[in-house]
Image (cartoon, rainbow, N blue to C red; front, side, top):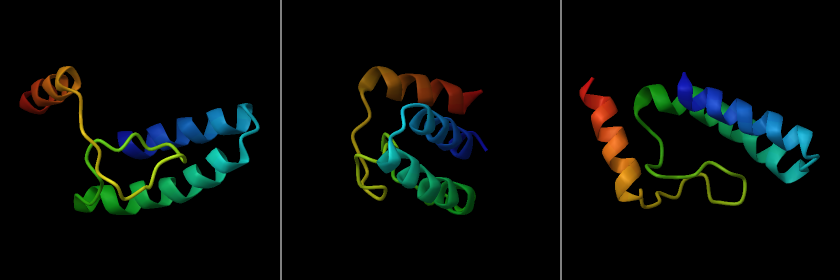
Length: 74
């Protein structure tokens, strides 16, 4: 749910900024996040913006990785 929600928020930001590329990219990513995330299919570390390939895994900064690891333990 949260993954799709973040893309929705990014879509809203794109609309506010009148950024048609971001709006189009987020429409596609919302569909992907809603259907693929429950199956565990998503690129780890990808920032999710329309300026990056939606399938490309990206490195996760160590401080953020630590936060994510702690969240998974709870």
